[in-house]
Length: 371
Image (tube, rainbow, N blue to C red; front, side):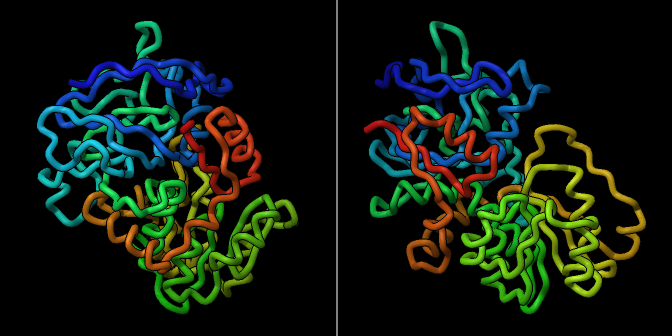
């Protein structure tokens, strides 16, 4: 019978406050849950945005993190898919395989294990973390900035033991989301033009689909050399432009890109991305998570002209059905993940990782738990 575990976790006590390494108590897994010893977890832009989000100040103290790999330490009642010792990826949306959405073939937004925004577990709406009896809230029902965490068994994907845990964690969110946005949501066609605000793995997805022009837009020129290896053919720093960036894009693409992607999490940038794509058939896909104003504003004339605006959650992938295929592509070297990692840091340096991402000095930081 599993008991409470005390371990180290990086706890955020308030919006934007430095994370503090604390001793937290982690409850045993409840029915249909597993408790996971985290091995590695990567930092995602959405962690930063929600950490800074003052509109959710009631959800603190909180443990962030959702891109993670680990080892099953114990299983709750009713769990048959996982055994102690299994290697797993945690995922921020699950797949129950039985609800209307899971059965539809049209959505990856499970009605039972969809995106959790209230800082609790899907099952009983309670937390599994506490400090001296005080509840500590979850993030996306994962909370991987802790040596141990509890997730619903529907929010984990089993891995073979030979998969490198320090890199595969990127498929828990960021890398998979970018590839899926390019392949599943936009369905990029060969020979097309693409503009990406915020860089990321969308570029790799566009390259593998045969896009002829892939423009990266970012304020950090240091990212350009790295981004070229993933498919970026042109790089634009808005700070160097003396006209609106959308006008620059339209000139480079003879009237607008076939596809534009907003990967930053800035709703104002969604309108810019829409203006950057072709008037007649351009598609804009937004996959960033905003930290502030969640409302998108756009002139209706852009949509009347034939443009499309689509949202993308986890690139349209169903975690249990589709992630094993992406893992296989990684192992076969069909997709590149390793070079997305620019920094490997121990848990004690997690604030350094946050600072690197805030300043745009990294692509992905992987946090390694103490052995």
